Image 1 (cartoon, rainbow, N blue to C red):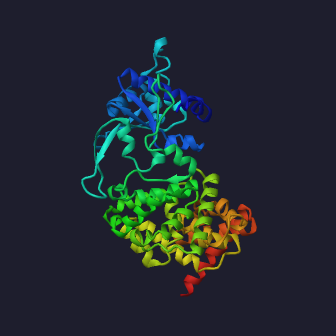
Image 2 (image 1 turned 120 degrees about the vertical axis):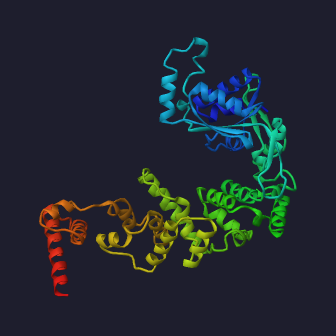
Image 3 (image 1 turned 60 degrees about the vertical axis):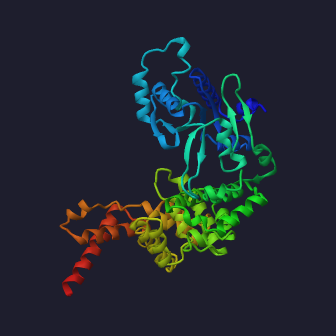
Length: 451
């Protein structure tokens, strides 16, 4: 089956051009290149995805090194897995401009165009390979192979497709396991009976894909999942690998659905018994996810741990927070943010802007956004005002202004807090804020002198 027309219709023109160039360059090196996996799946589904994985029949690392030199890109090599990652940024652009300041020959002009113009940040390139699992649940040993052998080692049929990008075969679909048909009927199917024995993390991925696309896990595949659970194969995984899969689930557009499905399958009891999934907490999770998207749209420059904010809605008490943080080696900061959230949940919703600031500003953003999801829906105007305005307000009066009036030490903080309160509650001017600050400081000093 040829997908050339579909590629040209569904991908940006510059991305199609990039794929053609990679296919041509690989052929010139005596290799054959393919795009594989999720990129092919999402192209067929009409889902936007520019996370491109390239597999070459040949030496993928050597080919990646050639592209790195040609396009002045940074290169990360994973020798054990015969893979490499090309990525570009501002530094790469400067390197590219410096290296290719000379005008290229007409025959090379198409090659020396910087890949940054193709709207990609990274490109994964791998040698076609087959795997050997020496023990269940451990990472495999790999060795070079054909594209067919490479596809047959993958997790599910819908991910075991490739599109050839060689010039004479551009757009040709390679589908040895019937993945295209499974996409059409909405089915998640593993490729062999030992799939979950070799790699139990595939259980998480099966659930993730099922819920993301509204598919169904095939009957035999579901039997194999239950068998893997009964044989305690998930307990053989390292905590790092489990955490990686949990975080991927929480990165889904609607994380509540796979979280709920994992409970139905009894997976949480094995990998994270601290997590409590109830109808109420699933509602909190959904709303927190909405608040996180709202916040990201309004404050794209603010960094936060989205996954932890979502998990906080599923950890019911201090013991569960401590235990989860210890099991998955989370930081003391994350643990404390969970404790602070539990305390904040017991308080009534503030009324005055200054009360919002006083109660919530000491909390990390993850705790605040989890609290928003637990307390209110996305249309709540007070929460929107706090997150968009009140949390970031500072008084017009500064510490230097108070020092100019002879105030030093702790009274400065007390004065600034009074100035801020006057500003947000009464829309006070600078002069009014300063008066409020000085008045509060005098009160504090008077009380201190009486003691």
